Amino acid sequence: MIPSVNDMGDDTHGLLKYLYGPGKAEEHIDPHLVAAWDSLAPDPGRNPDRKAALRALQILLDQPVMALPETERPAEHVWHLSVRAAPEDPILTDAQWADIARRMVSATGIAPEGDGAACRWAAVRHADDHIHIVATVVRHDGRQARIRRDGARAQAEARKIELDYDLRRVNTGDGTAAKRPSSAERHKANRQGKERTTREELRETVRRAAAGVASEEEFFDRLAAAGLLVDTRAAPSGDLLGYKVALSDDRNEDQEPIYYSGSTLAADLSLPRIRERWVNNASEPGQEAATDRSSGSDRISPSDARRQAATASWQAVLVIDQGEDGQISGLIAAGGEVLDALAKTSALNTRRELRDAAFVFERATRSHIRAERQHARNLRKAARDLVRGGPALGRVEDGATTAMLIDMVFFLVTATAQWHAMKGHAQQAAAARQAAEHLRAAYQAAAPMYLGVMRDRGRRMSLPLQRKQTAYLRRAVPELAEQVLAEPGWYALASTLADVERAGHDPAALLAEAAERRELGTADSISDVLVWRLRRMADLPADASATRPTQEKHTTAPSHHGKTRTATPSRRPGPGADGTREHRR
Image 1 (spheres, rainbow, N blue to C red):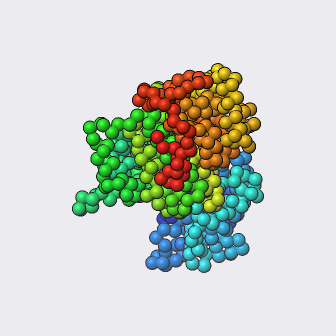
Image 2 (cartoon, rainbow, N blue to C red; image 1 turned 90 degrees about the vertical axis):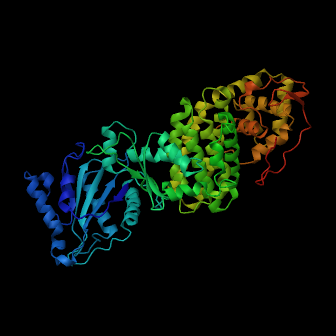
């Protein structure tokens, strides 16, 4: 159940007229009173002369306000609360909504239970799933109601109502969520046949445009390239103070674009907050932006961008497990940028799920813990490189590295969910878990054809070579060996272990390192996860068809330049710059 306190107003009659009217798209069905401060209050919805009854209800509600001397009347005296049930909740009766209305006005301070001098109020129902409560904030004794923190108190009462009525439990908010679309915005989207409101569409587009940006110029170029109308606000000195955006086809009655400022889309999309993303991220101010405007020598392939993003995402997972709160918050925010960039450059088979994952994960990127963004340079650079590298255009290696990256980002998102849950951030944890499910679906769409190649190669290996890989598995992860051997993906892992050995590594040592990096309980297939970790750590092509079929005896391995090199003695990778043991080429 979601209560929403609207802005205070000064026109009781105008609000009642809207609530009892047909709505902006004839969406108001049978508007009627379900409860009020007085059981004898007139109900315009049940009166043949609706106009007269509407005026009578307004006069009665306003009487305590009008009784004050004109100089003492508050400029804005109309309080408005909407209370909406979840789509999966049962349809409540009028009596049940009346009880909910009384509990809400009591909890918020409008009409505390047993207070004979409380404010006047009325609850109107014009749809199955919600009511509107209208009140005037002047009490019968002439004092104003104490409604400070009315939104928080309404939310707290809603949690109790959910328990009492066995409704869907909504996670407690912390005030960091972006502003929800209004009912008028939702109805407008429905009329236009759109899945999302203009506010949501703009928020998603601006967030994608901000993913990995290194300068204001690049940010506004991306907004324009996305087809948005952009209007900036500058100080007399010429310095930019803010911006607002609009969809080209979203216009008012005068056919003028309807603009939304960045800060009204989300607090972290204001210009000052977006600037924080690139401050101190480049080794020298403007270095990344200057590089991006060069002649093209800095171009990066989609597959290379995805491999680098996979490495950065995995390193972030390790920090989330043990880092400081501000550092972790910065990494989560940057992880959202990687997900936005991946969704922006995704292929058709994963586009919908990745877009939905990025859309819901943005809630997990905002909390009251201030993000220390200087610790997230690698992730932000990865997001930027994904955008610069562009979409995967059907090339096999691009698709395989996409599957690898989705796998790594899945663990970043699940680590985020666990961290938020540990901190008591219920809405953020729920959003991260929801994003993980979309990523799981995207992975299932992206990975099978590439894992299938590896499985076929593993099945074709000779029995002695299969036994050799099984021995590596039992030596590296004895506690997981039987489970992995029973998985369909074991043959892909066996094939990858053979490729790891051909590349000059100790398969058992690298496999043990891949398995110990983080728990594998959230994975559908442990063998699949280990495949992608090993191929990334050993710098193997994500596309196994790019490697030579495994033979039992070999002395050389192909380099990335098409030449061959002698296989070097196996060695365990040394510690990386971030304190983890990361393989170096």
